Image 1: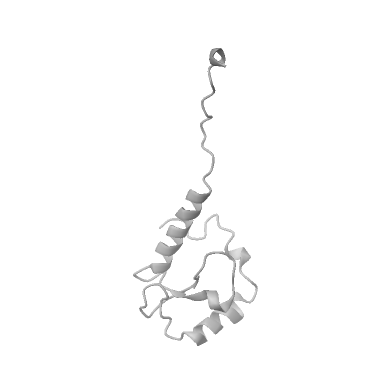
Image 2: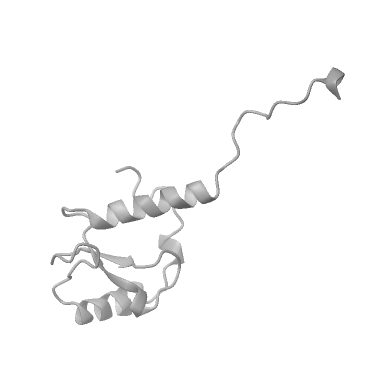
Length: 103
């Protein structure tokens, strides 16, 4: 997996109470850190179930990231690819122009 937070503004968009309130509240609700993706214990990353900036506790749950089976990494990668496909960047090559004699 490449980059992790490289080039991302995601961390700066997290609320100021992320570490002091939201993570502890998520831990209290799910102390075994059951991964919401695969259902196994040991999730080590707090994940947004629905992508975006909804930091409501109902949208946050644990997922495996740094430990196998890396559910969070695969989920985030899939979401990123879906977003790229939905909003592709323009190519570097200019589109073909019609021949002036055919106008």
